[in-house]
Image (cartoon, rainbow, N blue to C red; front, top):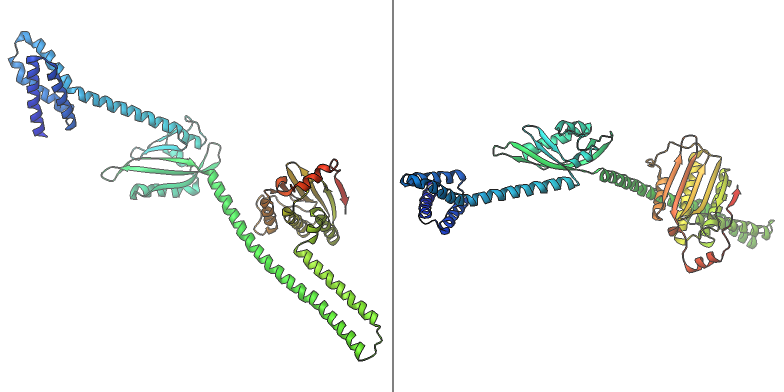
Length: 473
């Protein structure tokens, strides 16, 4: 550095002397180049002032008194040219700083994240306006004080947040933590906070900046997804269990019912054959044959019943409405329960794809009424309410405390929700203790209504929609 200063000092003195003697532009250009070179070499304004002072000391003694005014004007002009590169550099820094500050201000204003800036040594902190809006405050309502944020953190999350911050400052690990904050309205919202500290050479953090984003909706969706997966897992296990129970039930019926009846039929046939071949019998053959025919009829009834339990043939042969009518008739007779029906018989032509889903939903709803309600009357409705098909089963039983989320063992409700979801619909429940239980399936007509040319033609040829039918059982 000293060598460069000495060389620059000598060049400056020679250039200034030339300018004083000739006063031409070339000398001023030379001064500018000296200043630019000094700036590139890392010299500062104090270095330039020292060089200028040394040149004055060398030249001023030889100047006559009447020339000193012109001399001072000339050396000032030369020195200003030397400083021109420094002035331009300073202006450039100022412009760049101003532009950077403007960009930061725009970023703060337009950011979807809330920015924060913390000085650990003084505990000074800055919260951006959006940071405060996330917490429900206007810019002037929440003070830029770190304690204001600490007081808002949920007590269950406070220890985790402070531990993550301390670990980041001490071990320089990533600071990324999710926690709940109390808003101005008093509710808690989830935020994700990330930050990065700046450390001095001694390892002391002197500044930390970061941001927070509101992740409440994401957390709510994650929880809903977790609950849904848990429900599906339990429902799948229940379905597997029910499948095995159904297999066991069918095996018992085949063995105990069909097996016994076939055994009795075989014995009757053997007895008839024995009586016909060996010994005259007092029982007329006609009576024996009638007994066998009765056994065969029982066999046919058993086969039909087992087949109907597996899949109601009436669904395919006659359609959804007759199948539901038959289901309600059987339910009313078995459980001695009055059923009031409101069915728009001709309002909807159901397609084949939806029949089993709707039938099973009604079947499960009626089964729940019989098992849990203690009701004496049920109202069943199936109506068209564009753009939906509404299926409602309501009883006058004991009801229950309303809960949008089915219990751990409410597999029937879970199954109905899944069937409704397959059709793009939903299940709604209305109940309270002592006020009965109402289950409503809201299904889009686009998913349940037949849309082929034949059904559209038959619909267009029908008269105005028939009045709602009502039948009491």
